[in-house]
Length: 196
Ligand SMILES: [Zn+2]
Image 1 (tube, rainbow, N blue to C red):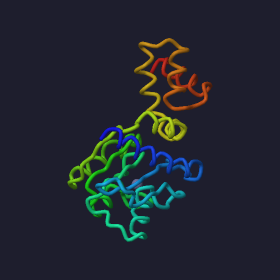
Image 2: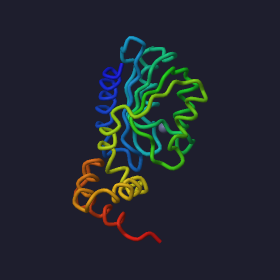
Image 3: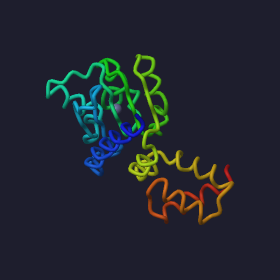
Image 4: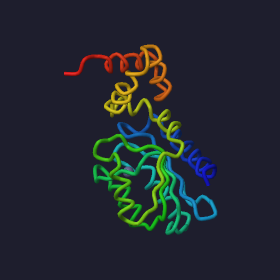
């Protein structure tokens, strides 16, 4: 099952790549929904700011094709969101639609979501599996994480700083987030700076 999860998550990652750069301050997320035999029912990626998230796009495509998503498995590169902002909370829509299982790559570092989307899904009876292809997803979304949720790389840098020298820390951060080494060096320097 592990390999199958990876293969389907890579399809979600491919979907997300189609949205890179066109999502405003939203992360470029990809999603695929499959039935029990692994047949794709719908695909989606993040639309523009204030428009559909990837999960909703995939549900819409399934609906448009007359597919029934009850009992289906959804693969999403990022944890489904948990609060009603410019759009309805995806986690609540997913519960409402009767999706049986959600497999996601990375927790949403947004402080209002981080683990909360997963909690809503589980409370709604949805099976949840996290961290599938997580490293790939973090690299795909690295520049977004660094730009909009810098507390995440800063916390990682501080925890790594105790065991890694300056160059190794910079290289590791550049690799984990797929970011420019100069930007990684800046995060590394901040992690070393005395905290107020
Ligand atoms: Zn959402």
